Length: 149
Image (cartoon, rainbow, N blue to C red):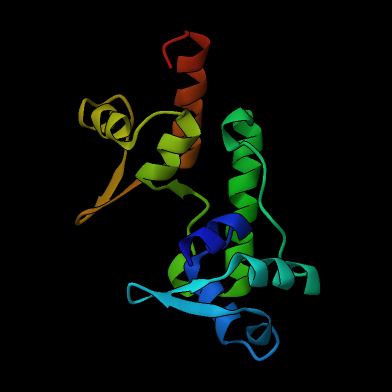
């Protein structure tokens, strides 16, 4: 299921929705291996051919420029909001630590180091950390111009 979600660039909840749908479930052969459900590659390919809603996700995120990454992340969030994956909805004004790390091309630990040393500002609510998108992107551009990041 995680691989199917990654290949389609959708959350796992969408994959489980596909598996339970009357329209697509008959196309997918589900087998159980070590107590976990798996979809066979042949049935996954059959599913891809029989529908026009989902397509394989195949571009290199790392090669995108900052503005392209921002557009892509916003696109993903709009898709999630339209699909009404309520637990997956995210605010466009803030980044999570993993999102900021992906945007900067660094590990999440580096983002944690940056905010604990005061290089970037964050908003904390209990254990939840959010990074103001606009300020982070401006900071990131400044540091990239200096050749630090």
